[in-house]
Image (tube, rainbow, N blue to C red; front, side, top):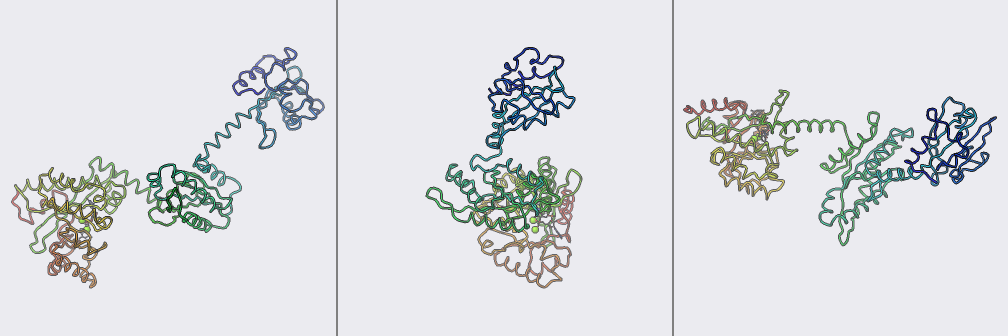
Length: 573
Ligand code: C2E
Ligand code: MG
Ligand code: MG
């Protein structure tokens, strides 16, 4: 009879020598028969092992009834001997008998006899085989992906840990490769999740087939597989494995009547002197796979890129808070009419002083805002704030102050935000006519989705706003786009302007842009004018407007208004 763990704890405990209770065997004869678990009284005299009393459950264990033939004496004799030679009254330990398939697991309890404590001891066995097997299969289930039968993330992590922490680490270390299927969610969405499952199983089979027997393949996420490569020769082994994987997936897949291809992105991280943490290695490979998704080539993890990404993440978190707390501000840089010298408008430029008091440059935080999507709330805020500032200047000028305001709009805003209604609302809230607002766009806003961009630009134009192409000359300078889209102003990028007088090529480029603008009936603003001499030259070449340190640096709202009042001779209240 096999005792459950629960029974064992309750029934055996009192039979073990505890305090002054007499041992049951010594109280009544035949007490061993009452124990529902295998027990045997053994004696060791003159180094010889002998079974004295044996209960029925013990007979049924197949561990023999004579000490001479019992594996118990054979395998545990030494332990029993050393127990009797010790000063302990009882002892417990796990014991495994038999080979891997057929093995039984016991908890062995040794208790010294009171009558003859030097030579006699009671050996009680609690059979825990079924518990151990259940635990083992549960554990295996927990570490296995039920769809593919491969190790899951926990299972993979266990194996990786064993390998990097074990003594048998391969000579050239190991590599963790993460393979992420591109656009797998489309298969689920279009063909159903059963088809998705079938595809994953096929992919798993192909991946397995492309690996060496000693490599471990796991499924660590929905469409994410991980491979543990042991490297004996060097890191090129990982490159070769990546090539084999790409080749294995390049043959089209067939599901129902459909034939299609599955592309994948691969990220690799290598174990090394400084990287012996399994979880970190998997995370690094996942980081590399995210970069691979953008670059389109297999990427190897570099700590430098990781540090940059972590910094960007910190910037993103702080910027999100700054937007929520309205801790951003705008500065205003005048755009001057080169013919008259009067201020025509101000460009609103975002400024951020972080919680530590450091002024963060837009060149740093605008790209982070674009990447994270924070540019949408930031852009809405900038529009609203710029419009309100201009409306405030109107009030101070006792009516329309005669200038406009220019706000930068990022490509992401055109793609993701419903920009025209947002602009309309900002104008209405400030009580401004659309003609007072210029929106500065870059060419990237147009090339990604020209049709959608065209519709948006026409909607913005319908509100009366002016559209300016910012940083012109640095992007694609696609004349086709320029001609078709309702662009009013070309802003010539400062990289052509600032040191133009010392560089004939730049003069030629600026001339070409000016003549193009004239042909297309567009106005021009030269950015980055740092000297008045340059301003005059540009005016002579036909440029209509200028912006740069020669006129003013970006100014706080108060200083900007004072500049405007003086330059345009406003009669202010
Ligand atoms: P941008 O729109 O081309 O703005 C002009 C940049 O040139 C500004 O830099 C300005 O301070 C700088 N600048 C003006 N005159 C001169 C000059 O004479 N010499 C030199 N060396 N630089 C001059 P800033 O303020 O650092 O802004 C950088 C960029 O950040 C802007 O370039 C714009 O693309 C972006 N940005 C700023 N605010 C916003 C915003 O609210 N929304 C969006 N989407 N982008 C913004
Ligand atoms: Mg601009
Ligand atoms: Mg610019």
